[in-house]
Length: 350
Ligand code: SAH
Image (cartoon, rainbow, N blue to C red; front, top):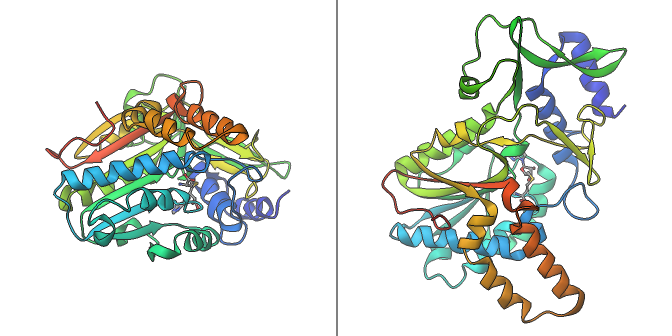
């Protein structure tokens, strides 16, 4: 048992089974034993890797797309350049490097980061020292200004609840104890059908996930963009409509039982983009591969390849492939772009 598993078991013994959302929140962000609170999980020695860690091209293209959207909206100044869950700060560093030569962009940008992990805030502070970023705890604290925002693999880390439709009606999937071991179970039948949009299309017998924290985040950003203008890119793995039980754990680059190592494995869920897009004043949605291709990744990859040879060139080619190929991240990962109604279309979409 991990130290956090013991704490969770104590809590269940005292107060009864907990929701999947409570379990995820404890595992990822417990102040002492949480997965993100205690470690830098990225890279070969960590548990997983992400697009900005795979290649600088990802951040460069996103940076230029954000700058184009800013120009398309009349170069408002000042504006908030925000990232949610910036990890090591690599993506924001690449965004800022790529946009150095866009006149006025850096002068007008207030770099704002939303990060829950003190440990990762330190890493971000080191990576981004030259740009004096500002950290905020909650999206509600975003300044009142035009907002240009990126969130890569942020929504998948937010807690979800799970509901099971059975012969007795809807029941919530809970985590309790059996023989002193954490185990999944079901609540008593719920007095009424849960309110969340994901339930509208639920077939008989389905397990449905409600990404309530993600809905809250997207609603908050959408409200700001509707009021002050701007654009947001949400990039994550997932799809359009809830796909059953997608809770998964990753530990040292391998799938793990989500209940086996609380605090020591990354826990995520596929992002159901349908109820998120419904919160936007206007949106566009496509695969990561299609969006990166329209943003010009092939030409950028060729440019960078000219300066490389040997293993560095091979790495570069395989990174390009990983980001865009439908068998790799190209199709599994999606981009949801949010704009205000009647605004110019977001860069990277047809
Ligand atoms: N965007 C980065 C990191 C993705 S991992 C990349 O692409 O490499 C998820 C990030 O979100 C981590 O930085 C994690 O600490 C942060 N995070 C997770 N839950 C959060 C929450 N509720 N509030 C703020 N940040 C959170």
